[in-house]
Image 1 (spheres, helix red, strand yellow):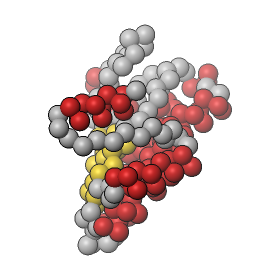
Image 2 (cartoon, rainbow, N blue to C red):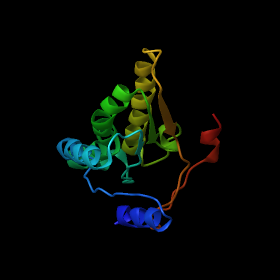
Image 3 (tube, rainbow, N blue to C red):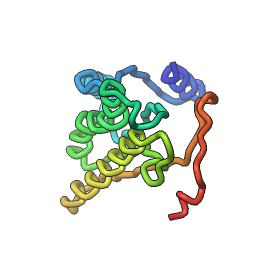
Image 4 (cartoon, helix red, strand yellow):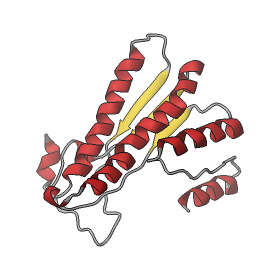
Length: 168
């Protein structure tokens, strides 16, 4: 639904926008949707990966299914979209990849160990990608990793943490 509103907002302001819905945790679906995007839109020069689920509970209460869903959504989705869109950017020698990680990747708090680990993996993925791309000195692809501060997006989950953790 948010894709619909984003497209509507852009069009309302006079811009051109097309929306696509995809389960980013599903590699096959990501690759198929990427193909459709490039057919309809053309070359993609900017990729913004902003995805995450945020279950909060002690690590000993996690089961395999929950952990698998978290890792597929919070980490593998970045990997799949990079595999889908990065080759086109490399071919054009132009692009910008932005990944939204989290402050939790730097300063995790109680009851979010798997979430923090998944966001740390995102940060590591982009750091590694930056070095991999820089091995080719003629590369004009930019990499940005954003670590937003904690935001309470669900009012039923009070986030409590020690601000001193972020002053490292």
